[in-house]
Image 1 (tube, one colour):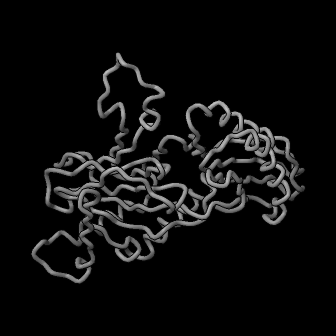
Image 2 (cartoon, helix red, strand yellow):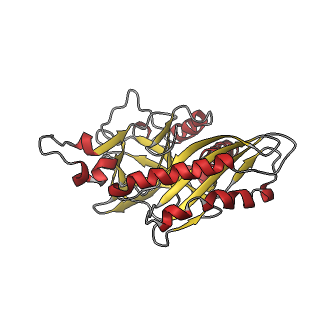
Image 3 (cartoon, one colour):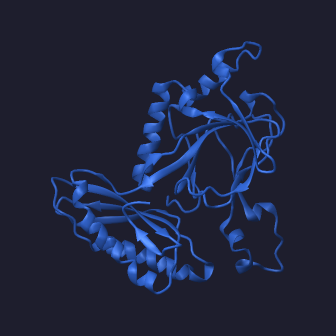
Length: 312
């Protein structure tokens, strides 16, 4: 699935069960005071954010959480072309906790939320991740006077199912629906979250990473005529390029596409994506001992209208 709309991956990590068990064990005896329970920041910004949060890296057993981060980082490199993760937070939402709509800039090109929430059988309402839909961001372009408009038409709500990973473009206004119905941390919304960062090419296989700069430059050059024609996208396009041992490209997949333009330029934006895919398909790479796969993130910045394929 291409990451343009939110990407939802269920049962993402086997480490989730152990992480959830750690959390439950610390709150099993509410009257018992223990040092590892005194780690929470009550984060409250009036009219914007209310939640309990702490450092996820410090909260969970090191070996368990390291395996989770390794799995998440590998997903980011291969699927998005992002090589690093931001500081990961653990957040708990009980009665009255919420996040109003906001955009995250410039933390990273993709946000991620991994749920440890016991969603099925929950005793609270709310807690869904909310994202404005694309047509809400271009409201008047698709407006119809005869059509009723309600929240569900404007906002996408994603349930924090246990074990679910949600990846999305953090520039899209998003938030968390207010939790109502429980003061028990074990019965609320519990998530680990952060951002994927440092987009740059990632090679799997014997093709040497220092041998791909020239082919990548040729692919990136295909954007120039479109940019010069006035297309001004902002965002990231990540391509998966499969290369055989002779250096011929066998397949090109669009892995992630968060390029955004005004609605009037959408056709031109799609033409730009097609041009980059076509350029990748005919690019020659150096021969190697076997087949390889390149994840190639191409970053566009609206302010400069320049393409930076090697760094964000």
